Image 1 (cartoon, rainbow, N blue to C red):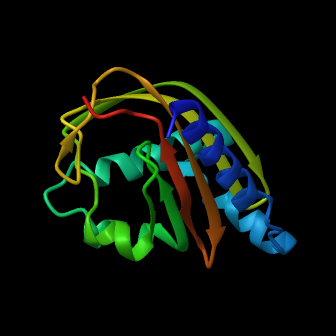
Image 2: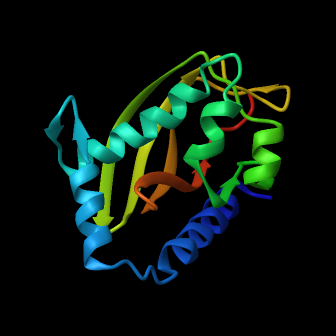
Length: 164
């Protein structure tokens, strides 16, 4: 599959996932806003989106990310890979990615009540996914998060990094 088709497929998948109506009460939306604190200080949606992405990526730097990922990934979580492979929560937890480091740039975060969408570029160091090593050059990514039952969880993730 051509890279631009993969990008379009991933983007359409994520748009459809985000377009699903979220019936959040005003109280839940207020709780979501109130939860956006770092070091005890309320932060912007942009800062919170960046924090959520970094939280996910930091989990992938550990020897065993599964215990931390399990509650962080939403039950309907999906990931779309550059090679066309799609995984749900269970299959991702069976074979999570590993990376030794990363650098984030060009963040854009949008928020509507209880949903955050973050697009950004990521340069990874030592990224190994199902035995394949991936390039360290910056590549675009998108992540979506939802506030539900008192916590933020990751709904979906896609990146467009190619194996080296």
